[in-house]
Amino acid sequence: MEKKEKIRQIPEASLAQTLADHKKMGSTPSQILKDNPGKTLAETMSDEQLKVFILKQVNDVREQYGPAIIGGELERKILKIALNYLVPNIEYLRKIKRLPAELKDFDPKKEFSLPS
Image 1 (cartoon, helix red, strand yellow):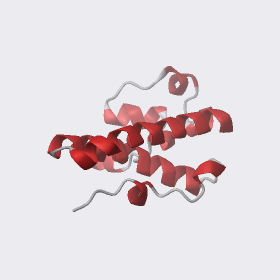
Image 2: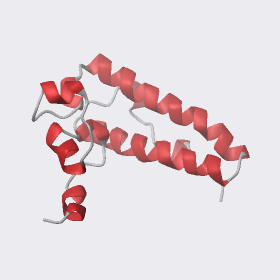
Image 3: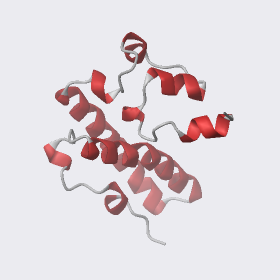
Image 4: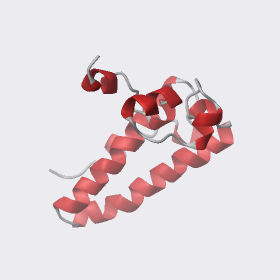
């Protein structure tokens, strides 16, 4: 199997990735994944830990949103990179029914949309 094919099989959401996924990517997994092979990052966290994790991601993107609106291309690229981490994680948590209640109706693509 080619490396591109292996990478396509890796979940986009960082919360859905396992130790094996990190090995496929050639990245260094966190200690928590090393200690819990076969579990996703989300599976290693309590609901409270997940809530803190995802709300921090939302706040990080929120901090990038203002500069992206008034800034130039670089600021927009930084926002897009941050959204590339947040959106899959929100979708994954919604799918596994572990999205915190505060984010029940949250849509990062709408919340952080940029004017054309």
